[in-house]
Amino acid sequence: MSESKLAAPQMVIDSRMLYSSWVPADPDAAAALLPNGLRPAENRAIYMNQYVVDKPEQTSGFGAYSLTYLGLDLAGHTTPDGAGPARFFTHYFNSSDIVRRYVAERGVPASPGATTLELHGKELVATTSVDGVPIIRTRAHVGNKIGVVARGHLTYVTRLGDRLVAGNYPYIADMADPYELVSVEFLAKDHPVYALRPGSPLQVVKSASWYSPRDSFVYPGGERDLV
Image 1 (cartoon, rainbow, N blue to C red):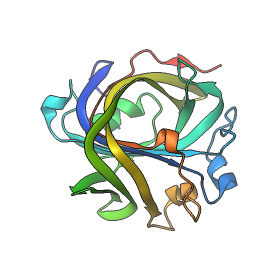
Image 2: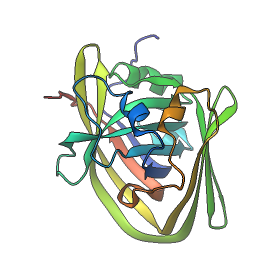
Image 3: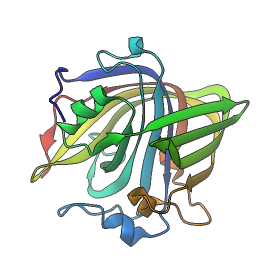
């Protein structure tokens, strides 16, 4: 993969974003995806973000793209304000070669993939595909009101060579109200991401599940080694 020529950091505005979190069917299989030095959060939560950036004008340099990334909440590491756990990327399916090159330089396990978000009335369906084959499908019920404007930082951890690197991602998001995560389906049993599938019945981590029709954020340029 060739080197990215984009400067850090990079800004994205007004993405359509579905963020979800759940307890996995096989917590041990999920935890096995973590590198040495990291432990899963006590509740063993998995997180996933499925989002679409519709127009190049919504980014400082990435262009339009779609993305699904997911992984594990971590024990012992938090966001800067201590309000939530830091999170480790295990999978990252991005439609843009430009973005994949940029994040790969920072240790993100980037690979090709496409994500769609389709809203029909109050039903939102997010589908993640690899090589044209759907591998994850999420359904939620969302309202057309904005309940709150959330803002702060998320912290994501990557492995870069033999280093663990943490980056803080500032965001501002309009949160749809009401919101209900209905289902998360992992459709490809032969894909490695299947290790993160939810249990049955679905156990939702409500504090980390929401839909934003307008979410703006920054890819970090000030990463730090995790200690």
